[in-house]
Length: 224
Image 1 (cartoon, rainbow, N blue to C red):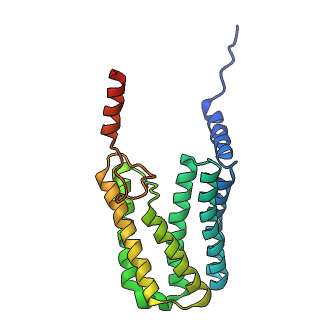
Image 2 (cartoon, rainbow, N blue to C red):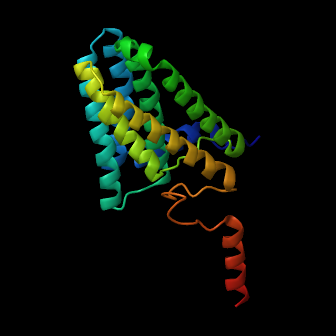
């Protein structure tokens, strides 16, 4: 009685394929810097739980440096990728949420003085994420100039507050205003487009062609 050898199950090769893809994506320096920024978040939480605001501020400064460097290197070396873009966006969101909580825990006087603007901004930011998830079934990885400005101002405001323990009210209101404007622009992009160009830059600078326009353009080229 002859027996036929059964093929190996697909489920065994699937994890190896995903692991190989992950290693391939993490083989570039920009993605390694982004991954390091993600890995810093739980380490900084440990410092927060032990009550070391100065070291947390220094850690956030290092994370901010990797944020600037990975974007610069990915463009300079032409190593941009969808994986890197999404991981960068996830790292930025996670670090922004964590930093807000760190300021509440380590500098409670700041939250007592500015709790309502902070709560309003957090609620609006969560609304933008919720709308993105409901419309596209994921958090859209927008790289708007206004968002980059908001992140930069947040670094400039939050790091000194953690390290020194003081802040400028004028600087706070400038920062929170830019954060609101950046979130509002993200919401407009999400609501007004069927498919989002994640590198649109700004709705004020240029109009991205819609998917319908692109399809019509392809159709016209084919007809020619």
